[in-house]
Image 1 (cartoon, one colour):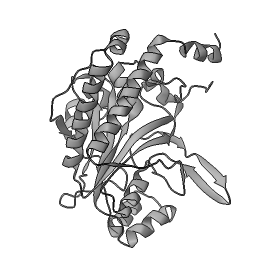
Image 2 (cartoon, one colour):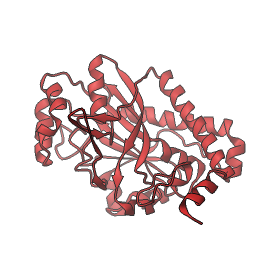
Image 3 (spheres, helix red, strand yellow):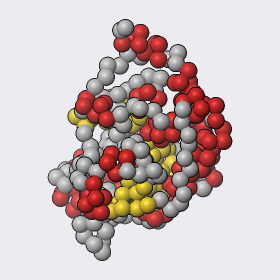
Image 4 (cartoon, helix red, strand yellow):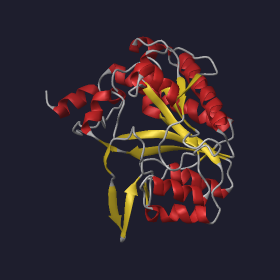
Length: 313
């Protein structure tokens, strides 16, 4: 069977249709929850002068940054809206969220993890003057609310998919990276995920310049990942943000980034326009995959976008 023929057969699978109905409920639940918490929805940014460098995140596996030339300008496609979320708070809005399409050209080997796509959507959000505890509490409420909605509204689909939704209790367990590495080793994500029955948090990652370093504890970071249980891995990544010009420049230089590549963002920081904030990005496809119990994240997409796989439709 050719790749195209297999793709057309997939589109006729009743399990895919059931998964997409679950996804529809997930999306509606997310919108209902965020608006109930007074978040303002923004439209996504697809092209820009600058995007998240995804560096020096040790979990990143990017082989190229998508670029286009338009009207004499070189533009990049969005890898993450983190920088634009910070800039959007200059409007005076306190709480924002975006259903943000992301393009990340991952190494082909990533396709074998079952967790990676090169085209996916994040529910990106940011809160002015918020702390990591604020975000973690909000996300826990969101996860519980959405799972309850799916359990109530998609019983037939879940039965067809052979999946039972487990509603976690709040608060979720929290580890530091130091604790989790001591228990599971440096390659801890899937081992720890397999060892848990409910989602849990991991905090304090050394990664991109915009995640705030603890000013009272240098070398430690006020950021966090949410990890699904049962081997499904990372659900969400976020942090409190650096907003002070001098600290941003120092972090960029320490990480070997050229501030000139971020000059528009840097200019806003230099003028004192950025505000303290915290936020995160929740992977929509990963959330749906976890809920329906799909073996591979590509199985929930009608049009697969998996690293290393040819695109047929």
